Image 1 (cartoon, rainbow, N blue to C red):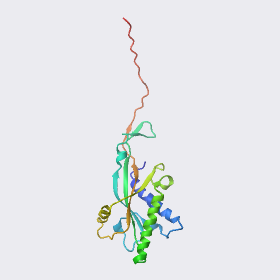
Image 2 (tube, rainbow, N blue to C red):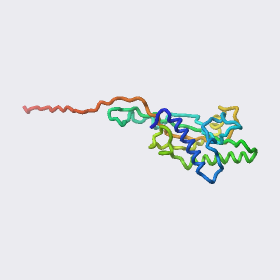
Image 3 (cartoon, rainbow, N blue to C red):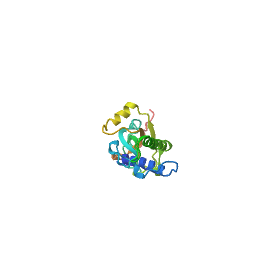
Image 4 (cartoon, rainbow, N blue to C red):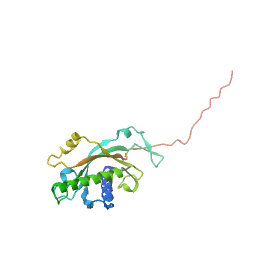
Length: 203
């Protein structure tokens, strides 16, 4: 469970995971922590330090969890709380060329950035415990999966930023993300039970 900050906390979790996993490797190119950012493609220009962006572009209610039980228990037996809002998040993961280099070398370097990012998501498809930041429950299992987006879907995403050149990118689904409900109801416990015995005589 988490507070209203859950969406932002998931984004920060993904960014921290990619940044930390890349920093721990000695077989890949060096990328500064600021090179992984949570910005949209149109916020990255030629002078930007961003080499990899994780851009949240769609949020949907999780259909499978929408019809869960009407209420669930809390730590207080006298209080019943409405079920959490369960969400699915979709991110556009995009690689950018470095500020130096051009031509084939820059293109190959850019594709390496995307490749190592996708490898990192594949190898860390489930995040939990200490990997989760902010208000996210450490018992939560956050699942990351690659979405097989069609050419039309990717084109549609990039058409929303018409002044930005297309860059190598992939779409990822992350979820379920749970936001606690603030709707609570007091439950009156049953302490006594009255039993009535009907005594009749035979005639």
